[in-house]
Length: 186
Image (cartoon, rainbow, N blue to C red; front, side):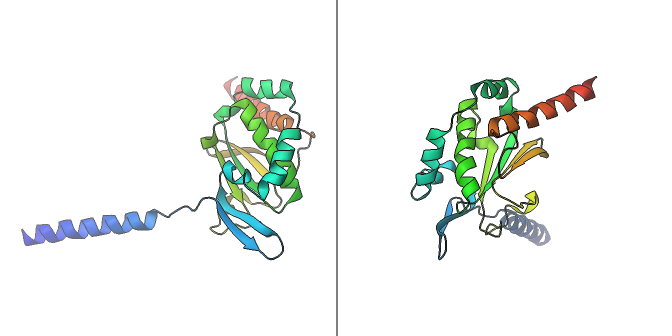
């Protein structure tokens, strides 16, 4: 009986130890004060942070002023943009992020893209976040929008869209993926 109790106690201790090592607390909406850039967001973020000062100054203006290409938005819905996941890596200090991130969110809102399928990571001027969340994505410039399906990257937009419209670049990525799926099925 003593031996059995000792085995149970040892097993329970091991399980609890592994669980505590495996579960790391994810800090969301971290904000820091910097000497050169003032307030800066770092690490995992939610869109709500961009609606607060000082970020709302640039976010709201660009979001409200951007005119969506409605035809492309309709095609994104038809091509099932919502079946993909996306990662947005941005810098609150970056002019390109100030322009493209509000536009990106306006597109997601227009297509009904679920918040749960978007991961937003804010980085510093060295393209780093406190916990290294950006590490797997090889970020060289921001903003970077990465489109994934089943955990595999199928395309990315870096700094600015090549077509001049984020929604058109997103549609190109989705159509390219859908074309490759069609080719496989043939």
